[in-house]
Structures are given as C-alpha cells and as structure tokens.
Image (cartoon, rainbow, N blue to C red; front, side, top):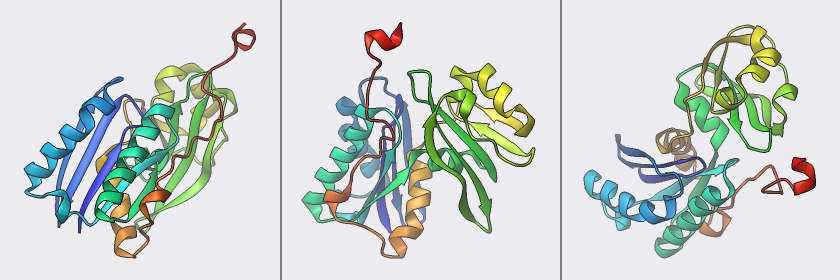
Amino acid sequence: MNLIAIETSTAYCSLAVSKGDQLHSRHILAEQRHAEILLDELSGLLREAGLTLADVQGIAYGEGPGAFTGLRIACGVTQGLALARDLPVIGVGTLLAVAEASGEDNVLVCIDARMSEVYHAAYRKSEGEWLDITPPGLCAPAAVPLVAGKDWCGCGSGFNAYEALLRARLGASLRSTRPDLAPTAAAILGLAQPRFARGEGRPAGMALPIYLRDKVALKTSERK
C-alpha cells in the first residue's frame, strides 16, 4: 500500500511515506515549527517517492501521548488530508512507536511529560507482535511501575530528564538505556501497515489525540 505517516508529538517533525515496499522518511528537529514546515516537507517526501496525494491509500499518525500542540497538529493535518481524499486513518501510540524504533524486544519507555512526570509503558515483543506489559500511563519518575526481569532497555527522553530518579526506581531491571530515542513516523508506519492490510482504517474524523493528562501547566501555587 501507499501510505503516509505523521508524527509531531515531540520536538521532531517526523514524516514517512511508503510506496509498496519502499520507505521514504524525514525526521527533522523542528522545535516549535511543526505547523510551518510539515506540509512542505510532506510534499517533498511524496515527490521523492514518486507519488501524489491521489496515489495514497491511508494515513497513520502519532496519537499520543506527547506535547499537546504537536498532537493537535498531527491530528489536524491527518484529518484535513484524509477528508480531502476520503482516506482511512489509523492512530498509533507514541510510546509503542518508541519501542518499535528501538529494535529491542523488551522495552521500558519513559518520555518526559514535563511538570515532574513521565509518560511510561513497558512492551515485550513475542513472535513479531508487541505485548503490553505495562499499559501507557502518567506518573512521577519515582512511581513508574516495576517490571519483572533484568533485560529491559530503557528508552525515551525521560531517561535524560530524570536519569537519577528512574535509575533508582528501575535500575535493577535495566540492561541498557537509550535516552535519545523519540517516536518516529517510520516506526508508526511500520506498526500501521499490517493494520491497514487488515482493514482497520477509520474515518478521517476519528483522528483524535490521546493526552493522558488534562492540564498543560502547573498553577503558581503548585509550582511553589
């Protein structure tokens, strides 16, 4: 299938396009410029793949959790493009995308959620499929759920932002850490492809974010 994937939940504007078995991707440090560069970069990527939007059969997007504005950008662009061409959409969890991007089989994901918290999940790959060992959640680094075993790879920006706290909590389970890993559109596309093949695509209006948190910042009294 010819598919597009959009991921903007972090500081990166990550895009991917598949043309049959060929994958074309871009992973750009955008900071606050996602909305400014996304459509131009996507147009360039489609040209690189030799496709137009009329050739695309579905759109995958990073549904969250992550930066609120970034999630809304990915969902808004996905909805707009999908509505214009009557395309099915599939949302992929950003924490699972980090696990997929790692190339590991036992992955404990922690992404910096700001406000002294992390988005977390634990996944194990078995026979090519990811199993939720700990489902996605939000908590303080010192309260991340423990996992059994000592062969886990800790991935995501949380291991940069809260390294000491997470190592104190999870150190006995960690074989290694990769704090540089972020969700990528290429990983999202890889996770979405079999779902599109199974006919799991949904209407464009169903491209909605998953926040896990309902507040953007601490009040002044809470910061004190």
